Length: 520
Image (cartoon, rainbow, N blue to C red; front, side, top):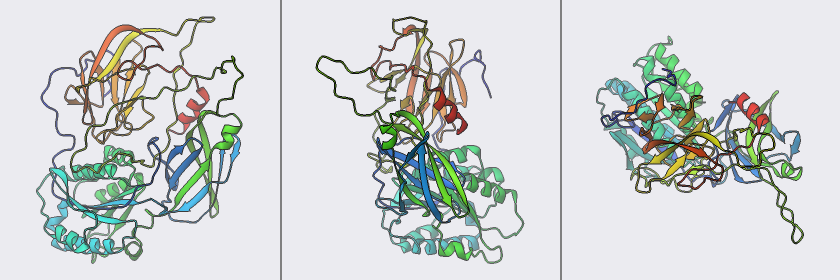
């Protein structure tokens, strides 16, 4: 539902909002994981281009590292890269698994299958076979769902213990439990320190199609950079709406639908011999950006990566930030040359302590695309020498904690999330990389919009896709609560601190903005 600027905001006292993830039922989760790639800062959500899902980090200013894989494993014959007409050295390539990499794979059983003894026994046997085919960069652990995810067997548990755990599971009845289990599984994978992540969902596809496909579920999987592989045990050869929903879910998350033989529930031989072929395909490329620095390029730019395959090629646009060249040495008494305005680092909130069952996330460099920067333009009167000042109401988000951290809203849209390319960065596992954005309407009022986040947006304890805001509204972004505050004041570029209003960036970069919009 769209709200006009005059719509009444959901800003009133209300009962306690529901839990972030709905009621759960018991299901099995097996995590295969290992060490984490030692990458730099998280630089944006992973992008997905034809046949080449990829995710990048910029651990050093003059180098871009990208993990890539192929939806259909095939030979890559070469890579070339350029940045706005400047040729870059041929990227250095390493096959997967490369040093320090890992795959986190979570097996989730649709508890609705427990009514069919033949199916559940077959699933147990298939899990045993899949565990036996795991490779050195796969380590096995187990978690179960019952209200909250719980780590019941540590990493390194033996397969017989996992199989025994599967046999003891039972399933309470719940019409929404399939969706809830999937959300929980995605949340665990999103928090697990691994370069690649996949969810294997074992099901008899007996529920409605709505239970297996929702746009919010796809958005949550993409946000967590998780591919979904649906393993279906259906006794009929005819495609059902549920199977079509599973296929769509898998395809839109760069996974696949694997159908068991309806006669004996056996899985395709190719899958049973190489179940991790697609997950472990591809590798890592490293792109040297130094030629761009040498010719004077700097700031947000686009790298064009050309991938040569057998008989065809793919062009992949990669957003990067080219660092400024080293400052020149000036003669005594001579000041430095003024440089272009640079982006101000986003406001960042302290991360709360993790829950006992959450894997520690400190130092994790999840492999993601570096996000392009968008800048706002503020026209100035010709010949004006005084600092820019906009006569608009000043709005803040004030964090509901002891510190009372306060950040001024200085742009429209003003994005909030875990990713480093947001205006407000919240390093909390309950917050999506791009969770929500605040928009200033032409009449000076403010609204907030959910960006298909995993845990949703709550305004005054009511879930909202979009809501008008007024002074005193309480906003929940994941587990983090804020109060929206507004007051009449002028916003000046000099009015800045971390816990006070931050600088409004007024740099113009129309060309990058237009090209970025074309790839969004």
